Image 1 (cartoon, rainbow, N blue to C red):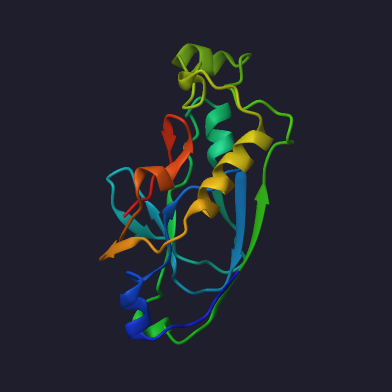
Image 2: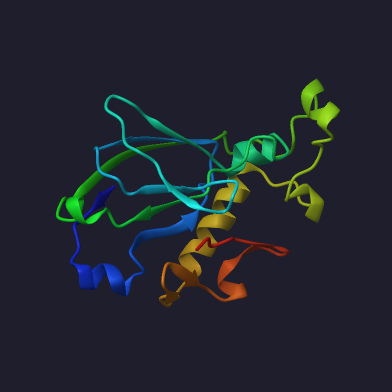
Length: 180
């Protein structure tokens, strides 16, 4: 993905973000990137933290399908792409991403033969609690349809992006979270 450098004014107009806080839909995302600070993760204290780029490394995000298949034992990485610090603001950013996901026919239910998951009581996920037994294909279609349904720019306050409930609905009873 190419993120062109933007002016201070352009960054302020979009809340200093290239991409608001979100999770990816597959199992893992591999990110090969330049040494420019733009990626942030939301930590367990609900604070955004910079992911420091390191030479010769790959950043790995856990995604929604893997979280669903582990009953939430592995959590989807909540992340966003922030405008870089001032000393790097003039540099175009290039990231090479590899999105991995299960085959389309795989049902996104917690793995039922895991002693660890049984012992921890991880026998449901957001889909199964709604009575849904989505395949990967159905999940991809639903989440991408929701993302493409948005026909207007969000309301932006600081780094908070606001969408209506109908714009965030993925399947009945399940809405996408947009993290500020």
